[in-house]
Length: 114
Image (cartoon, rainbow, N blue to C red; front, side, top):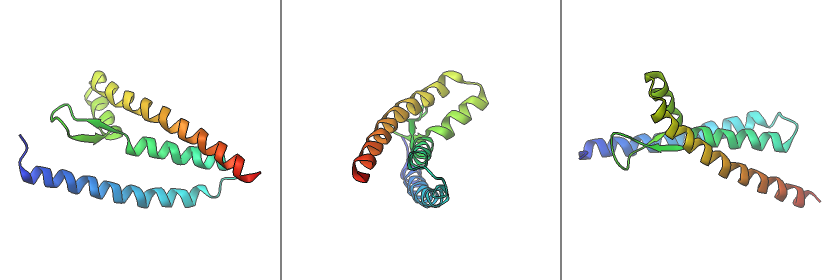
């Protein structure tokens, strides 16, 4: 069982991570404005969301979630490909969902521009 200090640190981490992601996302969005195609800009932003916001559940503690890129990188460095495979599976699911959202956004963009 986790004590209250660890739970508070967990909450603070996710709050700081969310704020940092929002700041980073808007910085990248302004940088991607230089790209000429709407589809390319939104695809890169969708890939950024999948890469940074996909979680994976901790193998050590139930109901504790870790950013998948951090978990996969750590487990690959340690040589545990099976554990890293869980994070890659989560990346795959998130990428499929985000691809659907991206395609629907392109359809919306095409219909609005006509």
